[in-house]
Image (cartoon, rainbow, N blue to C red; front, side, top):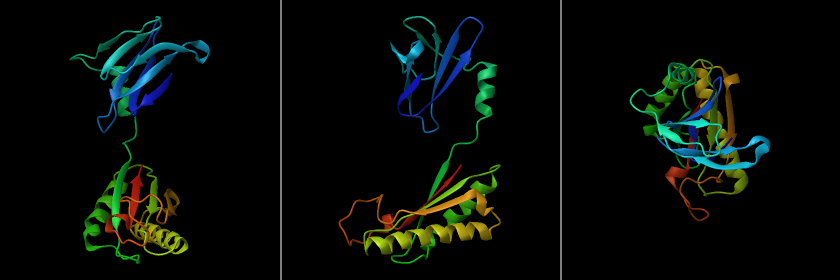
Length: 195
C-alpha cells in the first residue's frame, strides 16, 4: 500500500477473513488517496480516493462505501484517540538585521509557550530565516542567531533544551520571493514547529 496525493489518515485493519481500509481526511481537511498493491508490490489497478469511506480489500476491484452515520467502529476510533496531536506551527517576526522580535510577536510567544506546556514530551523545531538584504554568510549567521534566541527564550521558560533543535536557513526558503537586497518583513522570521 502506498499513499498518493495530499496526506490522509488511513487505517488498515486485519480481520479474520478480510481486511479493510478506512480513509479519512487529515487534520486540515485534505483528502489523499491510497494505491492498493498486489503481493510482491505489483499495482492492482485500484486507487482508493473516497473520503470517509471503508473499503474491503482482497478482491480484484475493491469497492468503497461511505462510513455512514455510525462512523468508525469502536476499535478504529480507539486507534485515532491514541495518536499524538498534530504538529502546530508558529511564526515570529524580527526587526531588519537584528534578533529583536517585533512587538506583535509577543502574543505568539505566549501561544508557543502554552502549546509546548500542553504536550507530553514535546519536540520543538526552530527554523530561522532572513530577507535578502546582506550577504549569504551574514544572513546564514543571523538566521541561526534568531533561532538560538528563540531556543534560549524557551529554555528560560523552563522547557528542556534537549527537546529543541535550532537551524538557520538564511535567505533560502523565502516566504515572499524578492530580488537580492530587498527588505521584506515577512521573510525576517523564525518558524517554531511543536510536535
